[in-house]
Amino acid sequence: MPYEIERKFLVKGDYKPFVTQQTRIAQGYLSLVRERIVRVRVKGDKGYLTIKSEVPDSEFSRYEWEREIPLSDAEDMLRFCEKPIIDKTRHLVPVGKHVYEVDEFYGDNEGLTMAEVELASEDEAFEKPDWLGDEVTMDRRYYNSYLTRHPYKEWK
Image (cartoon, rainbow, N blue to C red; front, side, top):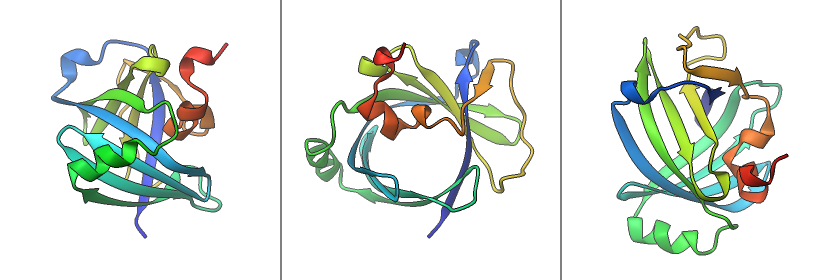
């Protein structure tokens, strides 16, 4: 099974002048069990089914299996997902050799903006732009699966 190695950060500044592409995303969760999180996503005009699981003794890596599925199937499956459905726009922002995925959340998670950078290894160096805020990679509250059960608007 392939790995996903990523680091997550809050966004504190204006990244929008550097955006090269943006896509609206709706995603929901069929399973929120830590050992097998199952996500359905509608990203633009495509559908995806993803299974994620933790990697023992790893800070930044998770197992990730993802397949594109028919859009109509993804839209149907969102009806069976935990509520609320995550609603966000993903902005792609190139920085050095990497592309940050900056997610601007709506609905119950309005006001939250996070950036992720995917790496080839856990110790790979990467540039941190000025608009990047605190790192939240290890803070589970910032996982989209957590935001489904505990939306940002409820945090105090």
